[in-house]
Length: 374
Image (tube, rainbow, N blue to C red; front, side, top):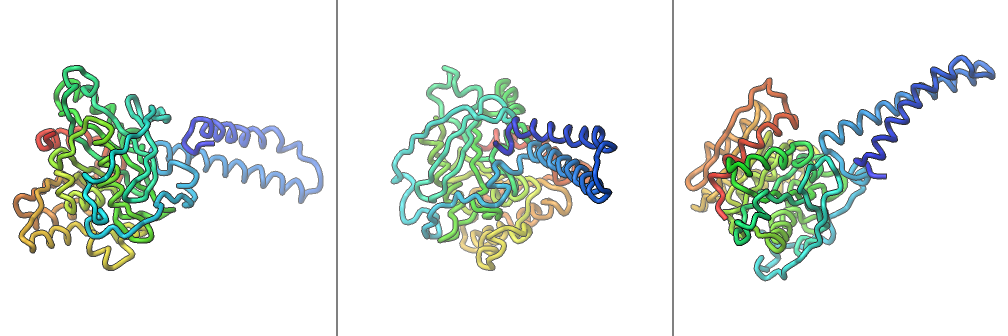
């Protein structure tokens, strides 16, 4: 039974009802010795507590898209595959153009919370070795005959940790918010792509490549990206691509955009951080070398020192102590053509929550509309 499916949710509700009815109906009818009566009543109360907690957990999990499967919840999932050493650029000595075309079978997303128009596929990354689900949302113009010869810009969207690839479509309601804005011409039509990011048990990969363990960077920036251009009318130009995320996904988005200006024009970080060690389960944060290399501050410093500041535009938002200072640090370092827009979120806006990030969806896509070009 699926962790996020309706049958399991209804089962939890039914068990809670049973847990309430049992004590009401049987409390005074329990026979036997006093010890036996006490134990039976104790276990009825314990059953009521456990079922109530389980129902609350399911409701919170479904509302916030934290865990997608039982394996994700239990920390037993392994989507990493064989993680070869792919070198500093994550390509293993190859060019992206050399990788054969990979046509995928897509079907409508099975979870109704994601809204209309979301498609899903199971992708086996040819370079990264990662296997996982990828969700794709097409703008209303995609099937319009007037756009049949047009290629579209793409935004890759990443959740926090723990987090499901469904979150931007379900919890943040991005597709439903953007569809009318795109149809009215208020926002440019984008393809939205949401790949799995929980790849290795109950740890956060930090979106890095670790030979022998996981190639998360290559999965996101090469395999998923190429799959989209192979299967949809999506531009392959870096100027047509952006990556966006919230919380741990914000760290990834900013890091990947700065590290790969040959693949992304922009990065959006909502309530993120620069130091990966701030996520206690981050693989990147546990390794001193990776911690240094994957900090966006250090990526930008290295690029500036080499005289090659990236042509990257960043949009970073957060409250004080929750992403705002991280954005200011990058803004102070940025040299042209790097640009950093920082927005301060009021401390009373809702904290580190989906409600805050959901409200920012229209604004960040308005910003991207003036930036990405197919």
